[in-house]
Length: 214
Image 1 (cartoon, rainbow, N blue to C red):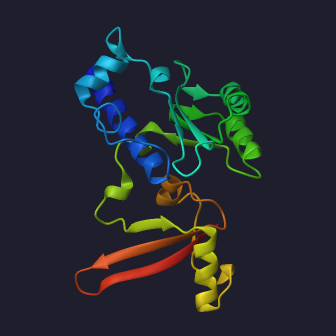
Image 2 (image 1 turned 180 degrees about the vertical axis):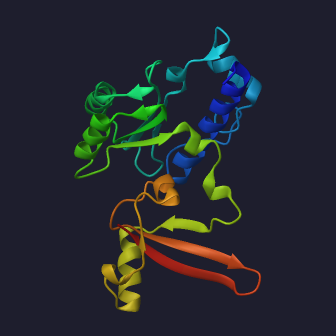
């Protein structure tokens, strides 16, 4: 990938990342130095020696409803020969969670996790998802902006309880959505959380369904 294509690639990925964490409830501003930064300003701010350093793209944001709940987004580059990202990187981010008080780390990968690194992430996430990862190519475009993707909204615990009581059903009676579904992954949907899906049709109007994450 030549320099110009790489810059445009990272410009798009960063924008999608900001849209994604905004949709999850983290602080993102619709300003020209944040979400709506221009390509020229992006280059001016992040480019050094005619290239974008991925480490400089790091993002730290609190949630609007709980400022102590903070997310760290890191752009991780694999080793130049095999583009692999190993356990060492995972350990580093675990230390940052502990030492800097982050609730979650989101890794944006320019490369692939090694099998041992994937195993380490699974072990760390056994009780609660502390580390998530996406490849850069997954985030070039925002999938939730596609015209064929219906609106997804995560229900709060109270909303989920009210839904089950209203229809006199249990969690396992609801249709399922996989945790690795692209939209579920985008929203950071956790197991046992319920998502409201709203489809709009010119013929049938608004159609709402609910799914539980497994």
